[in-house]
Amino acid sequence: MNIKLTSQQKLNLMYLANNRFIEICTSVGRSLGCAVFPDGNNAKSIMAAFNTFLAWGYFDEEEKHYHGLRYSRFTVNEKGKQALLNAEVVSE
Image (cartoon, rainbow, N blue to C red; front, side, top):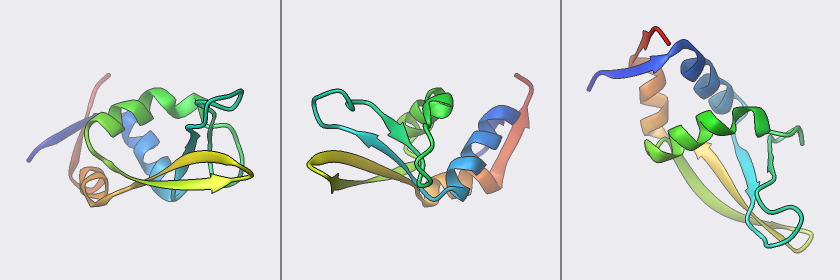
């Protein structure tokens, strides 16, 4: 299967794969939708690409709980890793 990614999409997918995971708060309240990287930095800047990759099935999801809040942890799965390896970069 020929996978086509823009250069920015490929950079974003590599970034997500190298950071190991992204967590999104799924508990109702002020933190709902808050997305963070493992180092605690805000992941808002990469959410558009994340949503695209999620729709393409490039992530596995695991539920976590911290201080009474529920988070979904997303890690790049084998399909996402293969997409990175086999991707053809197209112009934006």
